[in-house]
Every structure is written in C-alpha cells, then in structure tokens.
Image 1 (cartoon, one colour):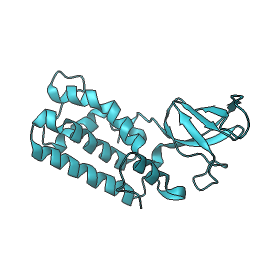
Image 2 (cartoon, one colour):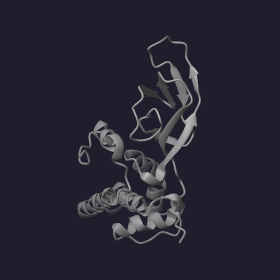
Image 3 (cartoon, one colour):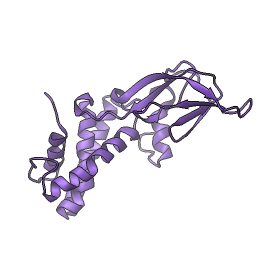
Length: 199
C-alpha cells in the first residue's frame, strides 16, 4: 500500500490525539507545523543512525590536491544525495580495513588514491522507499516536534517521547539500523552526545 507524507503527518497527529488534516498545505495550525518540520525532521532522523534501507554505495573518483605525501591530499566529492558518509574502508565493506579520512562539507579527503568505494546514508524522500520501522520513528519524531506548540500539554509531549523511544528500540531490535562492522552507528551517536545505543 502506498504511503504519502500526508499519511505520516496524520499518524503524528494521531499520536497526539489530534484531528487529521486534509493537506499539508491546509491553512490550519497542525498543517502549518507539520509542513514546517517534515523535511528537516526526516533528514535528521535518517542521518542520526545507519538505517539499513538508506545505505547506498558509490565509487567516486578522486583528485589529488597536490598538498604533498603522507597527508589526506586526495579529494572525493560525495554524491548529491548523501546526507552523511559512513567511515570508508579499503574494500568499501563495513568490516573492511579503515581508510584515513576527514570530511569538509561535501568532500572526503583521504590518502588513498581513487576511485574510493564509499557507503553513505542517502537522502531518500519517498516514503515508499522507507523501512516501516523508520516511518514509525519519523511519525513519533514529528509528534515530539509539534506536541508543545500544537497542544500546550506536557502530557502529550511525554506521550510523543515515549512513542519515539519505543519506535527506536523496535528498529534496533529488528536490526533495521546497522550496528555491525566497527560499530559505526554507536560512534556516530556518541559524537552527538547520545550514548544510549553504544553497546
């Protein structure tokens, strides 16, 4: 069954026990809030974790920046749909030998000559491309974002947060989020101050 952003918005409203909307462009407070937060929340939730469904691979050519030997002098431009790269390895596999690298904006710098096989979290915008468990997380995340400005009820904020935690736990339990190889997901979470899933 096809799912639309409107369906997801209405599921978020259902978490808060609010009436559904007819369109994200509808001139009502709920629609305005959901329209404001939808895309940014989707991108943030995709980028927070290594969602298996959103991991894509690419082979990217490198260009030598001429900054000398023994430095990260080979530049690789990330694909246009890349939200964030996963740490690169020599063979492009999650359990491969790590490659020295750093990222600046949309460029990876490495000491490895190209092409470089990378894996990355893609900015997938069509809800029909998402794992159902990610959809549940996004629904709850949207509910958290709009709970206070829409309902002004602390209890609804707690309900939304609880729904978010349950949805995320379910995604980890079902292995919808990659933990394997070198625990890249945990290290990404730790960098952002979230150590709940560093196991």
